[in-house]
Length: 145
Image (cartoon, rainbow, N blue to C red; front, side, top):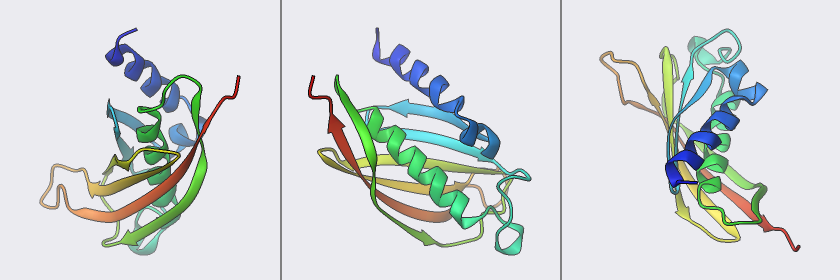
């Protein structure tokens, strides 16, 4: 299987997760060490300050993007165990119709560090404006079989 076909299968599988469907999240791009997602504003994810996307939702989607970015680098028998640390800096309210999430692996190893940026994804005046910066450290495991 080619890398592109593997990433296409991976994107489809993650998009079928009920949490992501409910939050209006789609995978817009995958490459080694990087995952790009888009989240459409909807009645499920909006309940924050100034009628914005809830900050907990933003952190959750950034964490998912980080795990997906880490997953693109996994070898046979490896898997993401879970998040060890997550920090969020909220810079502006996420009030756009679409928020984009770009997660990039900074360090890959037993503890993998991923940086994610949430930005205004609309075509308007504020397109590309940074809403939040997220750093996720996740632990990787390996099957012993």
